[in-house]
Amino acid sequence: MPQQKLRIFLVDDDHIYQFTAKKTLEAMGFAEQVDVFPDGEKALDFIREHASNPAILPDIIFLDINMPIMDGWQFVEEFQKLDLGSKKVDLYMVSSSVDEADQERSRKYQVINDYIIKPVGRTRFEQLITEARD
Image 1: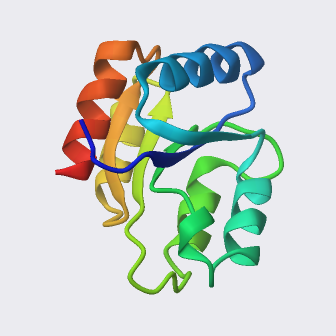
Image 2: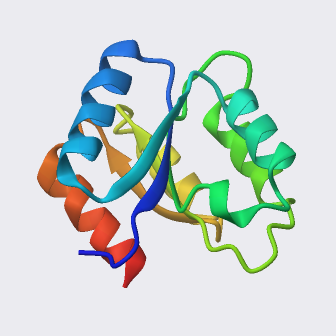
């Protein structure tokens, strides 16, 4: 289990997934805070606004692909341009898409740690968080 409590961002427009994933992550005890954003633009705006304050930036982002306004791919394109100093952010694409093209595309981005297929249960979240912090 990580020493420090983590700030986790869930960027997903599915309200049921938001609710269950947030409750799961909070119950696991890893998170100091779990912030939920319904689209990539809102999450990116938050990160840009607080880029100079690493303490409130996310340690881990679970990012959906298909969302309104700004999808996961657009988010990744903009996110990789940001200068967050020495802040390490682990980014996971989380999607219900089993399309190999999406999985292949995700491997082309250095900022994406892994491509995860929904649903994500407690055991998988625990595994990802432990790996991310090692």
